[in-house]
Image 1 (tube, rainbow, N blue to C red):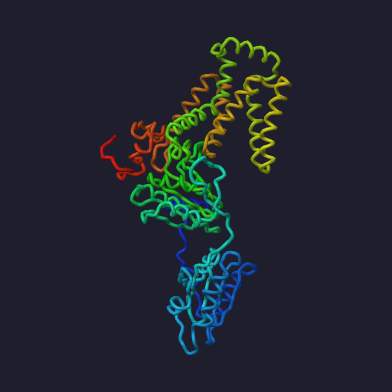
Image 2 (cartoon, helix red, strand yellow):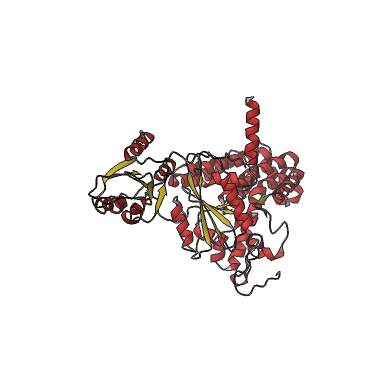
Length: 518
């Protein structure tokens, strides 16, 4: 019987999009008696010493009020001046008191919300609001008094640029939305808020420009976020993994960035952005594979330099993933493609090497991964020292001990530099895994395994979508008009159209564009 019930419950969850239907109980209503409300909240927040209760006498009357707040999450000066001081002097003896009087005359904060049950009040308190309860009123008042210590707006760590703004997102959601609002002074910029996480109740914001973004994409993003059923969201990557189409893939389908100017650029193309409270990274969707190789510097520098930089990044993607495998093919299977002098030098060094070419490459690649992880986990000054000195010492020692070939050390170093050129960290980490897959296939089957693996990778990429947009657009399907800002970059005066996939019919970016295809 229990198995049958679990089976029915599983079917119901699938029908509702894996979201548990919330309880229809609206919550325990507030009492008119202040003592009962105080005792209930005091018992609810038992052993929560950061929850403060402040009793206040209202004017010259015998009525009292209670202000409940979290120490460290509110502006106590605002509570003292705007709430407590007003309560103590604005009601005279003999005057009645009502919710309208409290809301209109006593409270001078920015925002006041009515709470009719304990659930709304507790959620507001834990979100940083002050909860005001007055004797004789069976309703509470949530006062906008949020204020806590936060990191200042600083330069992005992972996406530093030569030109352009030096501002990066912080861990505070309201600061992040203000950085975007300051750049788009238009009422068409919409910001919708969600609460995600049964325990954490993390604030999540969805941003889009209503007259540019596709309504289908916007509705799909809101639907997927609304269907998330998880106990806590600690970082934006939680949202990213849950709402993307394919989880079992190496390639990310959502672009993450910590630069507000980059988010604004994508919003103006019709994309949708998701911001998560507590995370300095924004999620941009939908995206295609070439956009993971773009940087804001592409638009802040002249287009010849941007064209060269993008070409180098696309080349680095292939070099970082395939150069060690090409070394195995040349040394083990197709040595006749190499110049005669290099063949002679390789043959001379291989006579004293104890490992096969595949084992030799794997040994070096694993050592490089050790150094990379060590440099990331150690403190910054020590991590840089370990990365540089460790690579030099280990490489030189391995050559002197006749464990690896000197040519292989050069190949590994060039491949490592190629992986550093990839501007998106998520794509760069995916490339690290892909390199080992291609390497093992090449070592087992030679050139046939190399080509077969890449064919499977391309077939997999053709089968991926990001919120309805083909992942290889504009390569597959091939669209010449979309190449001018995805594969290469042309002068800004010629960028007259937005991408039709995301912008739909509103493709006019600047004066001169017509409705016909270019």
